[in-house]
Length: 388
Length: 75
Image 1 (cartoon, one colour):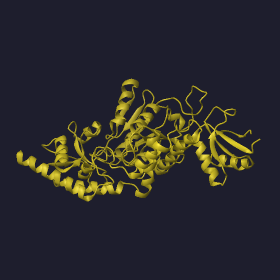
Image 2: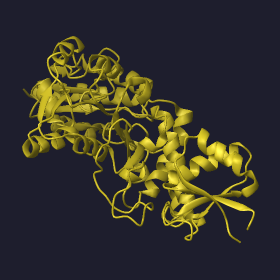
Image 3: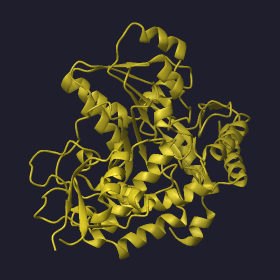
Image 4: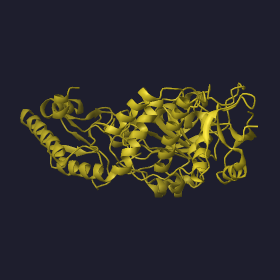
């Protein structure tokens, strides 16, 4: 992407990944590439120690952000998807019953459906409001009737930005292992795994935390012994063919993505000054939803009560991909149309299989960006009405 | 003997936890390659002045760190 092109773009696709990245991300990745390329924790020489120190400091910072008391319970993975797979495949046993929200991404639904086929687990969807937020009263009635081996919820939907009441769910299911998919909320909303009683949490680094792709983190409560997703060299217990039973090594076989982790550290350095992105995202999203609500034939798929983290909508008579293409070509607005890898959520919203248009603002967006996007949607909708 | 001691670990994460704790207490220390005559486990150990071993042991206990052992280093 050239500098000139980038200047003309309005990037409203932060739910997919953040762009641009803060300067610290690139600076720390370059430093790790040029100054410190030894294998973290393998050799004991000073470059290896320096690399391991980057991993340690990043883990400490991230643990602080997520309310993890003992940072060895926070392990690095390739991304949020791997963290979710780790918990789902490492915890569940044949015949287990799992409760999910209706808004789960395929990163939860696909591993679960694989276990449905291979191990006969059962997946039950909890009752929810039209935007997919779990109905706690209805869920409470269900909780009294069944025992679940796992409750898996996405903290905020990547489709419509609706936020689940995690603390409320913990109250409804006090004993059920709770897995939170924080892909959309790490770095965006307050998260404290100890305070909120979260047993497992997976997050990506490249979205709300503004870091690089290829690295994620997964919190694993020490109360549960989750089976590792993979086994191999850890730099520890080298005399043994058995995977170590101590953390984080138990879950970090193979060479870590040091450069991605260094970029994560850079992102976290900046995050301490920026603060959480939630208030800004919610403000811009609400302005989008307010403006969209006056577009002819539009149907909002996100809650317009100030809580949503992105704005999802449909316009009758126009396909989402058609709207997205015209927004890009006519206004330089980049967004994501379609199913956003979450067909379950669209079934719940009634937008399957066509999907929605999703506008997801982020840290560098301005009110002017939002107004341009709204003008675009208005004009596209009007032209469609004229040609009807 | 060398006047230096070394703490051996199972996992490198604990190396930095102890390093951090010792620096906070003003105890000079350094991560070094684990002497092979002592262990084949985690490749990095923490070296410290042997005459401060009691303070190091106290820090290990306070931080609730799992270690493989504490040894005096040979010359």
